[in-house]
Amino acid sequence: MEKDKYVGIAKVGEKGQIVIPAEARKMFDIKPGDSIIVLCDKEKGIALVKSDVVEDLTDKILPKGEK
Image (cartoon, rainbow, N blue to C red; front, side, top):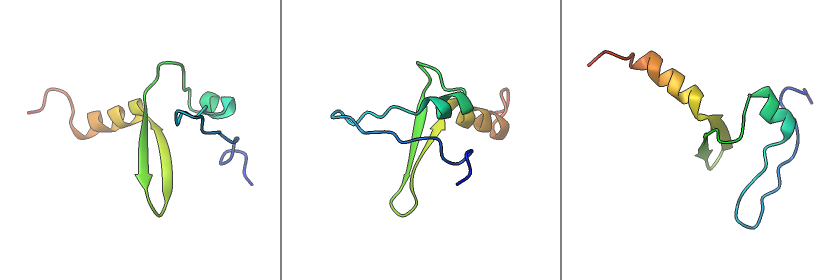
């Protein structure tokens, strides 16, 4: 398995919280306080995306100053 596609296992706690493995946090520059968007598809699974990625994409689609 390629190392850039698998970095660890996250356990789900009693409150439904997960800990993102340190290597994944480092790879994606995830720091305490960052917001993560949870994308779900019943057939394909769950994806976690840093919110700033979506914000950057939104800025490209809807540049500031346009109405």
